[in-house]
Length: 411
Image 1 (tube, one colour):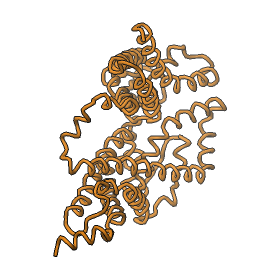
Image 2 (cartoon, helix red, strand yellow):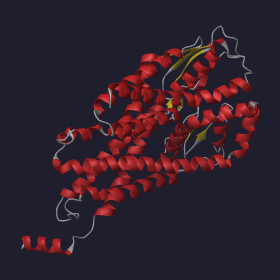
Image 3 (cartoon, one colour):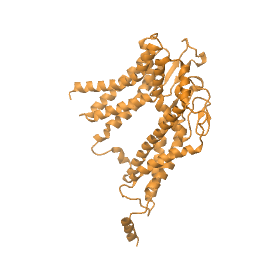
Image 4 (tube, helix red, strand yellow):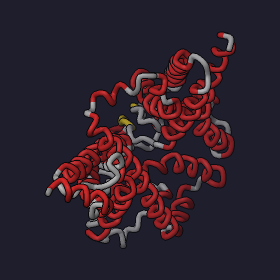
């Protein structure tokens, strides 16, 4: 492909990724600008707000200073930070990056194309964040560019799989002893599959709560007085926040729960909710029946056990059987459980860090989950579930031909 076409291809891909991300916030805001605001703000104000929402969706800190602006916010609460990510934006960025990665993998000179794409996206992201600065909101451009590029690079790597370009094999695998590579690979598969499985369970739990709390959610919509198009804007904002809320539901399933502000905590064992903003999605929290106790922990543990039972065969696939005559395979099962628990704890710590932060002034300085608590809780559940599922799947009597061979050798 000629260099000019390659450059054009890369520029269009980068513009598509950044434009779609900002457009998710810009389109509903344009509707609100026309219907609710009645064109009182300028188009630049709408654009800046859309960029700020997009940035917040990737965990980019926003420093808000309402001093000197006519608002109903008291002077002592006029300066605050917003750090709670609306992870729907980050998810969209990662999915678009996966698409880009797959397209790059099919091109000649993919390393050059990939490098150009990364540079173009980073440049556009930095420029967009710079244009998103306003009198009341300060966006950290350098840090914001890094945070937005993180999900993009993760998705790009997954779709591109650049390690396939190394003909001599994956250099990272050389750091792991050959006898333990299958254990590490199986632990990584169980980590990802168990996390996604609990995401599905948490999604069903959230959907059930939304249906049960429908009356409360409607009353909150009516209390906002946003009319039809205002309701569309609020609904779009809640959809962007849906992945974050699903992580909160996961934290509730595994025990530590989540907070809606200082002095509040929602767990399976206790619920201290207090007053919360008129956000319809928060009406899904069942204030009366939220306490179910320890039995709820059986659900994620059982999910992990089922996942581990389906994938644990990978650590004995080379031999074709589990050797019960020695300690080696038993040790491998134990190592599988520990490594999977560590991988899972790290994964939930990172995700939990993005699903928590400041959502406003006052007691909303912290909203979300405690990353350390959810990491330890999830790691413990994964350890128990992996050991139980792996043992149930693998520990079997030796096949007859293998048993005869072992019996012959021991005579």
